[in-house]
Length: 180
Image 1 (cartoon, helix red, strand yellow):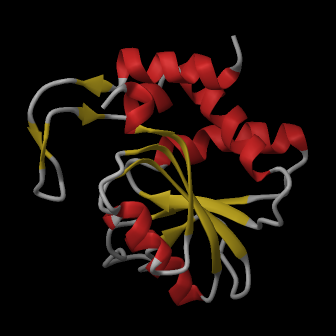
Image 2 (cartoon, helix red, strand yellow):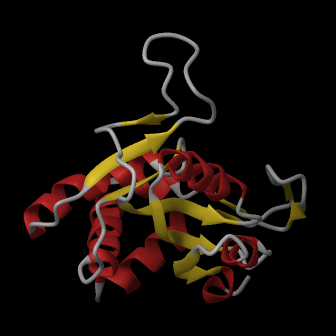
């Protein structure tokens, strides 16, 4: 079984709850997806790192990160695999708002520099709110957002919202891949 198929089975088994829920966007849905149940699983973290590093290998990327919480375990999993492959990447996490103390930063990790090419990652894409927030934070620094990579695109308008901001979206899977 290849990495993509193994990840799909793990996501289907662990990350999807097929029941009515209200999403953070306020929309109601007949399923909930919690990618952290897989990205915080050792096998899942390994598979996610393999697949996303494959998606980054032929890109000229300087940094990868995303908005806390969905991106945190993905970013953490990427580090060792990127290092093993010789990918020279900085990793970062975007806070929902800048700290009010200490360094008062919103983007944490090795300092990003204007002109750097970055990729934003997240576990799920619905309306795009989390990714849009991360895109805005790194653009304020002067970085170029090359693309966003998500584990699952719910196909509910997020891709279109990001494309309107000139951010290309690549999803590992869509909700349709799971019969949703």
